[in-house]
Amino acid sequence: MHFYAKRETALANIVKSLEMGITTFDSALGGLGGCLHTKGSSGNVATEDLLCMLHEMGIETEIDFNAVVKSAQLIEKVLGKKLNSHQMDILHKGRKGCLS
Image (cartoon, rainbow, N blue to C red):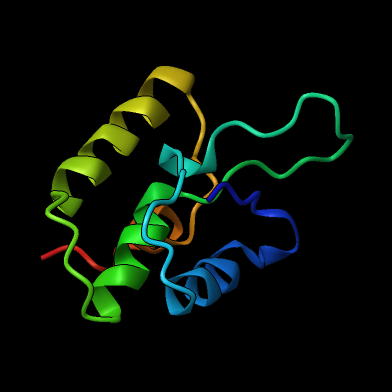
């Protein structure tokens, strides 16, 4: 499934999809991307937010969350701006978030 982060409903839609048996979802580090043809598009669901939610739900992904965060931090450095995700916001405030 592919959900945009518009109106902050992507994670809720993923939870509902999981309840329906769907287990494959698109995401992007920091929510990068979006629809170029839609004015004000807010981007894709952030990989780090999706992984954190799945972890909190007890769903194993075999994805190294710490490596994902390091990659997101590298992207922030290269772009020279903060990425648009709740987990990155938490880390910027000096808190741990879902980091182990």
